[in-house]
Structure formats: C-alpha cells, structure tokens
Image 1 (cartoon, rainbow, N blue to C red):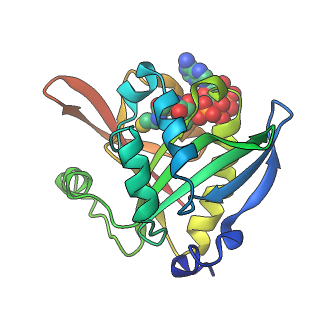
Image 2 (tube, rainbow, N blue to C red; image 1 turned 90 degrees about the horizontal axis):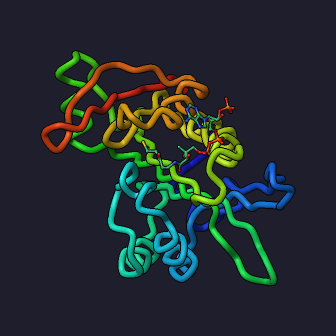
Image 3 (cartoon, rainbow, N blue to C red; image 1 turned 90 degrees about the vertical axis):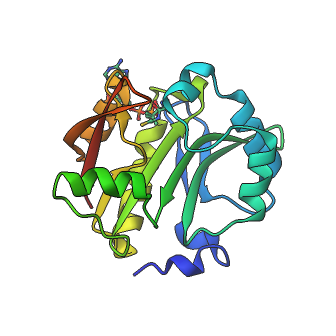
Length: 200
Ligand SMILES: CC(C)(COP(=O)(O)OP(=O)(O)OC[C@H]1O[C@@H](n2cnc3c(N)ncnc32)[C@H](O)[C@@H]1OP(=O)(O)O)[C@@H](O)C(=O)NCCC(=O)NCCS
C-alpha cells in the first residue's frame, strides 16, 4: 500500500528507471523542491499547439518556482520523466495527478449522476514535451503511474477539465488506458470537450 504522505520524504518509493523508445534512459520520479529551473525550461519549451489543449496552470518561470516551493505530492503528484544529457537534466514528460478533485469537474459528473469522491477518485492532467510526443513516452509514464494510484487506494481516475473533442491523439491515448467517455460539455462558450473516466 502506497502512503502518499511519504512521497516527498522518500521519492524513491514512486521512482523507476525506464528505457525510452528513443533509446534514452529516463528516470520517472516525482517533482523535487530543487526542480524549478528544469521545470521552467520544460514549461517555456511547450509549443502553443500543446498549451492550447493543455492548460492546468500558466507555463512560466514564476509558476515553476511556486510549484516547487509549495511541493505537496500527497495533494498534487507531479510525475516527471527526466533524461540526462551532458550532465544536464531535462524533463520530457510532466503528468499531474490531483488527489483533491476540482469543483468544476465534480459538478459536471454530478449532473450526470456520477458523484466523484475525493477520498477514492483522482484527476489526471498529462503532457509530454513536443519533441517526444507520439513516441510512446506518455504510455510508459501511464504504465508506471496507474498501478501507483491503485496501490494508494484510488479507484477511479478522471481528466482535469476533460479533453477537447478535437484532441484525437489524447482521446486514443486515454482509451488505450481504459478511459471511457461519460459525456460531452462545452468550455469557453463553444469548445467541445469530453469527460472521460477510468477504473483503476
Ligand atoms: C496526450 C499525450 C500526453 C500522450 O503522450 P504521448 O507520449 O504522445 O503518447 P504515446 O506516444 O504513448 O501514445 C499516443 C497514442 O496515440 C496515437 N496517435 C498519435 N497521433 C494520433 C492521432 N492523430 N489520432 C489518433 N491517435 C494518434 C499513437 O499511435 C499512440 O497510440 P498507440 O500506442 O496505440 O500506437 C501527449 O501527446 C501530449 O502531451 N499531447 C499534448 C498535450 C495534451 O493533449 N495533453 C492532454 C490534454 S487532455
């Protein structure tokens, strides 16, 4: 059984090394307090195409700094895939799992008579660096993350803010990991989105 409260003191309990499809070695590990510089570089490197469909928070150096300062992996687990090149660490994937659930997500599920429970459900917001997208990195991170969530006693996983209907790659990715669509909704007036949920 994984105790989420232990993660920041013992990150190794949720860390592992994997071989990426590119042949590089990556360390899958939670965000550390001293990651502000590499997290900021990751944020600033995301393309507008990625940030158009992925927006859990602003992508600037100030946010990277704040997230590292306010580190609390038992509340928001920020799982990274990190490669090392010439002694420099580089983040190639950043997956957020929120253990609290947002009211906006809960309300949409409630309207569909699917009440979410912050004690046993959690919410995912995944991203992979542009140069690494569609090369299998996201699937490797999911393969690591999902059993961890299960062993932390979580039963279901939803998407933070759903997924845009036009984001067919992400929808395929989620379906591959057992997510199913539970309904559609519009955001900012006109954008079509789906809510998707998976049993862990
Ligand atoms: C969504 C995301 C996290 C997935 O990570 P990834 O590393 O690209 O995913 P993978 O390469 O492991 O898997 C992608 C899958 O989509 C498939 N795919 C790629 N392009 C596709 C497309 N245009 N339509 C349908 N499927 C597509 C790939 O073939 C692969 O499926 P497979 O494993 O069955 O062959 C990543 O693409 C990303 O960061 N996208 C931009 C941000 C985003 O959309 N975040 C989610 C917001 S809800």
